[in-house]
Length: 235
Image (cartoon, rainbow, N blue to C red; front, side, top):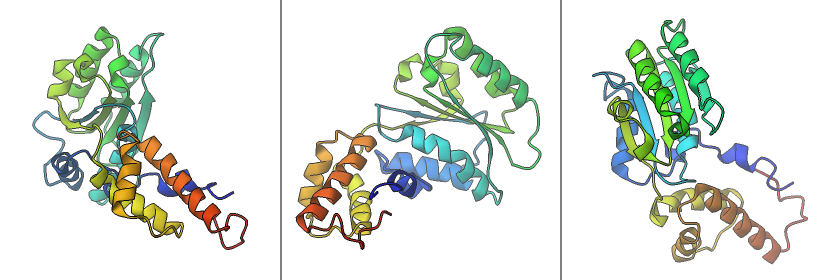
C-alpha cells in the first residue's frame, strides 16, 4: 500500500525532524545534546518538555537519549521509557525502580536515561520521590519528561530541569517539513500560501499535519490518475 512505511519513514530521527515552537527552545536542546551547555551539570539533569497535546513532545523525548549519547561518540543509549498512566499506583513502583537503577553506574554508555511521558500523572508523593531519584546520581543520569500540565509538576523537579515550551509551532516552521515530504511523493505545484492554509487547519498538531499531508498526496495522485500505476511506490 502507498503509505505502508509512512510513519516509519518520517518518524523523527534528528532534531531537524522536530518542528519546534521557537528557535530559542531548539537552541537550548541543541546545546544540551551537543555538549556545549555542559548538560547534565549544576544539579540539572532533566529535560522537561511541556505544552499542548500533539506538538511532538513524546517523539522528541524518545530520541533525545540516543542523540545525547551519540554526540559524545557513544552508541545507542541505555534508556528506560515509561508512560505514566492515571489510576493504580500512578507510577510509584516505577519511581522506586528508577531510584534503584540510578544508584548504578552505566557500564558502556555515558549516562543512564529515564524517559517519563505524561509525568504529571504521578501522585504528589511519587512526584516528591522522583525529585529524590534525580538527586541520587545527578552526574550519571539524564531524565526526560513530557507534560501537558506544567502546573502539576513539582517545583523541585522543575528546578532540576531544562524547561522547553512545546506549544503549537507556526505554519512557517512546519513549511519545510511539509514540502520535503510532498517532494518525496512527487507532489509539486503547491504554493506556500496553499500549504500554510492547510497547516493552519491542523492547529499545531503534528498528528493532524501528517494526516493532512497524506490527503494532499492522495488528491494529487487521483488528479493525475496515478493511484494504480506501478511507478507509485510507497516511501
